[in-house]
Image (cartoon, rainbow, N blue to C red; front, side, top):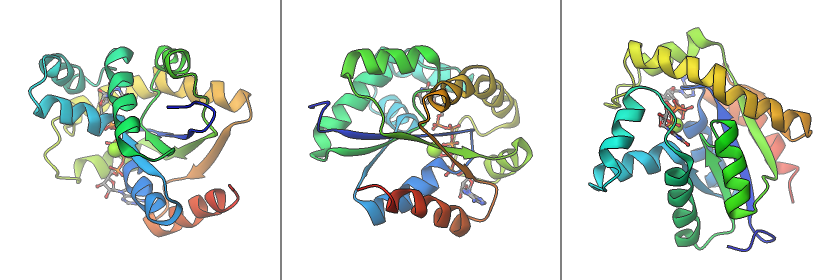
Length: 189
Ligand code: UP5
Ligand code: MG
């Protein structure tokens, strides 16, 4: 992975803000590979890896998995994709994730797409998602919201201070959100 050639966009936003939904749309139109850190961690649990139990416990508690684990999975997925344009969804989730990713990969994001959505709306979405995710119960959802506010928002603020954040109103219907997303990606090369 040549950090000079690789183009990365971090897609951030609270639990249920629509990161995965919008990334699927972006992939169809703009030729990126979508890497959801949460999906990679859930696949790692299913694969029966030695870290599986630890990851499962962290996700159940809404806690952030140690960055070496997540970064290894992201690097492997980037290498295997054969692509050089990536949407990294749901990562970095804290300051330590952010610094470690930059340190290990030497990759700086092109920009950060940030989905802003009120908690009540995110809670409604997560409680009606019904995809059997072990963290979609009200106790874990509350923990996820708390970790988002305490640990993940500061990462968004860090990138905002560098002028890298493109903020989207994610409370609107899916199609309207994507119209706003499209404007941003159409302006890229
Ligand atoms: N939906 C989507 N958009 C909608 C819209 N505009 N209007 C109405 N409904 C909309 O959407 C959620 C639901 O809402 C879906 O049913 C969808 O149809 C509907 P989705 O696109 O799935 O939202 P997303 O933001 O992707 O929600 P997700 O639950 O995946 O976000 P999280 O950030 O909570 O989950 P993630 O998978 O990233 O992480 C899970 C856990 O993994 C973390 O809590 C943590 O424990 C761990 N993790 C790490 O430790 N490190 C990492 O780097 C990443 C994850
Ligand atoms: Mg998701």
